[in-house]
Image 1 (cartoon, one colour):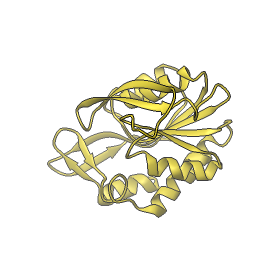
Image 2 (cartoon, helix red, strand yellow):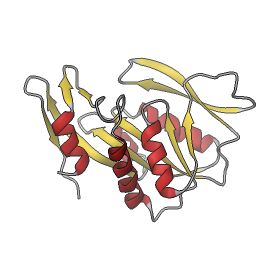
Image 3 (tube, helix red, strand yellow):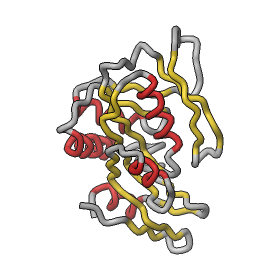
Image 4 (cartoon, helix red, strand yellow):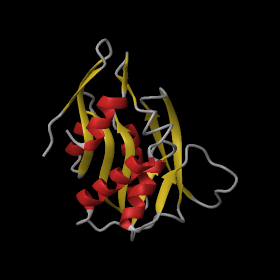
Length: 194
């Protein structure tokens, strides 16, 4: 069992409806030392790739992306869920559906921050159905940039997202892949990884 799986077992809460709450350490209250470990682990897994930018989606992916960006020594960009007055000029837009929030959002990235020269590592906290990742991939490709890889903290292996992304040919690394959860017992079963 790796460090993230151990933390999920210790502090994660399984709820009805295939919900895994990790808000005490990952995506509401954040364990900064854990974020650093996650950044270092993604660096180990992708250090042989050319990476010029880290991309995520607001809000839960930002802390993870910052740690990864620090390890790579590159800028981090996050897709915003709404256009604000401080975003000027042209933007890349993709529609994404959130498994957690059960809604759709147009996410945007300013064209000033992604170019055809970029090699982008996309990171996020969760992968369920893959809609957010597909939206971010679409933005990278709209920029003419290269998807260097995708790093996910927790993948729900019993949902289709990971399979869809891998079948599209992308290099996807998930630190913890949950194969099953039981809300009645609070148990989480992880997929064995190399």
